[in-house]
Each structure stands twice: as C-alpha cells, then as structure tokens.
Image 1: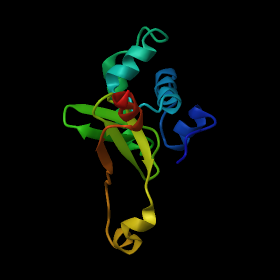
Image 2 (image 1 turned 90 degrees about the vertical axis):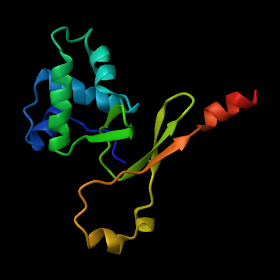
Image 3 (image 1 turned 60 degrees about the vertical axis):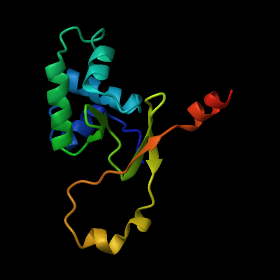
Length: 141
C-alpha cells in the first residue's frame, strides 16, 4: 500500500487538480492521519490552521479527490462516510468497541484474477467488523 507521496502539490497537478492551499492541507491531513477520517474530523483538525475553511470546502475537495481517483470513500456504517488516501486494493476492519478502522492487506490473487480481469469493476469493498486485538486484551483484564 502506498502511504507516502513526496510533493503533494505536484501529485495533485499530475491528477489534474489545481493545488490550492486548502486542497494541499486536506490531502496532507489524509496522508498523515491514517484514521480514515470523516468530513467533520478533517474540518475540526484543520480549522485552527485555516480559519476560512468551511465544511462545504472539505466535502467538495474530497469529492474532487474521489472523482480524480486519488481518494477512496469508505462506508462501513450507513450513517458514517470516511475517506482514505490509500487507493491500492486493501480491506478495512472496524472495531465495534473503540470505533477505530484499520487497514487490512488483501491477497489479490485469492480474489480470482481471471474473474476480475474479465469484468469492468467500478468499485470494490472489503470490510470486516468485530472487536480489535487491543479491545479484546483490555476486556480480559
């Protein structure tokens, strides 16, 4: 999974996105915080640095990133939309106890490469829910 992009401004330009200060900061946040944030989380984190930032700007920027295929949308719970800057194939695990979402490596070969190549797949989602190792340990204490 790719997790580090050198020059974010150049990366955005390469994907036909005008690299405004707000867009760079939003993508920077996604790269630095692999917590699969919501619009609210991003907004609250960046507001102190960018007082003119609005939730609408965050939402519109994320939609642009999704359209340009540099960010994925994650909907594990119906009422909660989260965002991920890792666009390689991978899965997610959401802990029902602490609410954290973790990345999970997925073996693409196990998915049936021949099947995948013979179809035009627009989206793929791999989600697991349960109790994470940390919460299981804490529960036993």
